[in-house]
Length: 250
Ligand code: HEC
Image 1: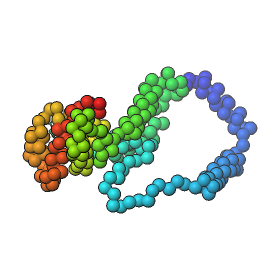
Image 2 (image 1 turned 90 degrees about the horizontal axis):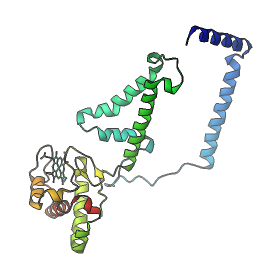
Image 3 (image 1 turned 30 degrees about the horizontal axis):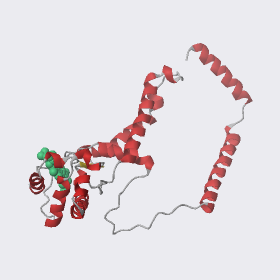
Image 4 (image 1 turned 45 degrees about the vertical axis):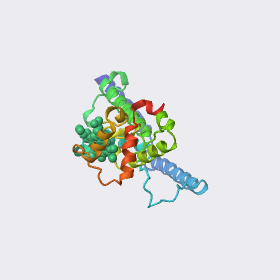
């Protein structure tokens, strides 16, 4: 703002101030009335429309998928994107806190009087980037598969072999989904991409015996799965050996 602009602004301000009304009671009264109307509307809506109740909580369920409300999907996804355990506090506390502090201090570090977005390239770019990043993370969070289920139909080759093979495939899928493999491996649309490799095409990369060996004698940090009952273990190996990449869903 140059001197001329500043003087003009001060002149206008003093005119307005001399004709103006004091904050108390005029502005205060307006605000209070609006606040009362808002509260009254909310109370009326809760009385008339009520709030929707979900199904009763079931403490015995093992298939419950904890998911945040959609407006927290971006935070939820941020946590999934940042893998190393040491960095998890950074994702959950660090980044949101840094963003809040930056926002809070905005009037102190951004003293640019310019108001047109195109004349403030850094502020505009930062704002647009934030919106795009949150939108993208929200989208990823919305389409993320469940961490305790594998949404995958038996491939045609399995169906062709008859009911027993399909049942074995389904059982193996269930065992894998509930054994915590998805915490480290991605299978189809479910699970985390790392620290282990994706298993969507593991049947193409490793023979059956090698898959079984990996489960009994894995490389750290993968835990050994020697406690699994033999029939469930076989089903798990059968399921994994049938994973042949994208053709699984054809
Ligand atoms: C704590 C994380 C973790 C868990 C849980 C885990 N894995 Fe792994 N898995 C790994 C890592 C890391 C590797 C890669 C090891 C290496 O570098 O050889 C791996 C490798 C594998 C491989 C060999 C992949 C290849 O391309 O050679 C298979 C198969 C496998 N895991 C299956 C499973 C199954 C099935 C489960 C669940 C029953 C499971 N994993 C649970 C971390 C894990």
